[in-house]
Image (cartoon, rainbow, N blue to C red; front, side, top):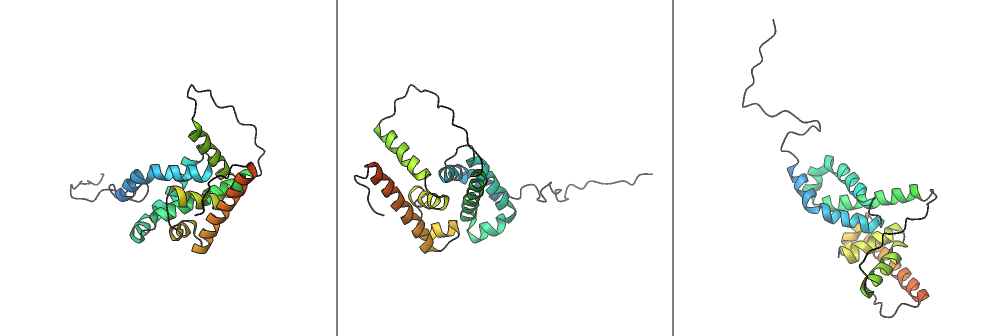
Length: 190
């Protein structure tokens, strides 16, 4: 004869597949919902590739979720996720550099004719994409995210002097390339 099992309404909810109880992790979910778009933009600016950015963000968030309580408590969640994105970008670059790339498909024609400011932005972005990954990440963090050198050092997991060096070397390379093209009319120092 089977044993009777009573279901008590006061029992705690069962654990889910991830080992968490329903409702736990709400802080992580709300943080991801609020910071997700900014992390996507950051990943795109670091990689320069719209198709790789969401994957990098997802991988970084997957790595952050098990550590979320300690990251949130210490206030290092943003730096941890951004560093994971940068590391993922570097790892991807190392894997892809061995591949032989085929020519890109021509972009679709649009009826919009871009103005000179769009051309300048495209040209600036093309120059930034030629930088090494760490320098590109440092430039994005400094000028797009508007972070201090100390914050950049935290994200890139390096010394503050190294973060400064990345930014200054990147700017020197960009200035040199502009000079080589005869376009360095009013570029100011940091």
